[in-house]
Length: 121
Length: 107
Image 1: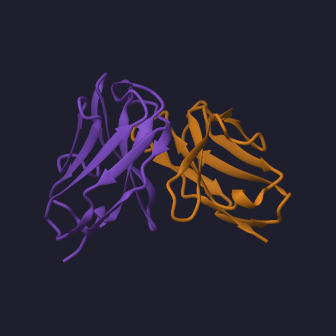
Image 2: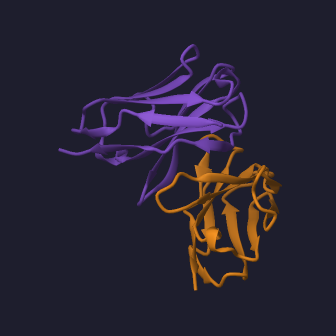
């Protein structure tokens, strides 16, 4: 059974940093690209970033230069380091498995339960 | 960015009704379209990929179609567990984008 367990969310002040982690199990982690997707009531679902061992790292324009995505193949974990956080980064962040090993042209077949990130003073 | 517009934004229907949700892309995306179901308080679940390919375990009452810019998700014979919000997602062009959602409610 595929499981994706996020951790690390919380409340942070604008300009601060926060890290999210995702522990993956139930599939061969190195064979699939992994993505972060966030959700807010106002903007809906928004793709954030992705990492594949086959074709590297991708970021949305809204987070590029502030967020860093990484993965640890030995631990089957996926990470999102969020720096210079803004109020508009407030969202529920999902760790998401792709149906394929490459990042481009993704479909998302398994989602974690989500981690809440709140950016507020 | 490819903008996806879903219609209607919400609909009410009876158990047993058939409903169709539309997703229009701002530019042609071939068949690189997926549909997701999200129930209250839960993560989205993939129903259909490649515009019409049903994921394993998804009931046959769900079907998808379309090509280019216009796509549909049809639920033939709504069941109580189908009342949820449905999203389309395009996978053709980076950055990958989602529609705003269609909420299906019980009448």
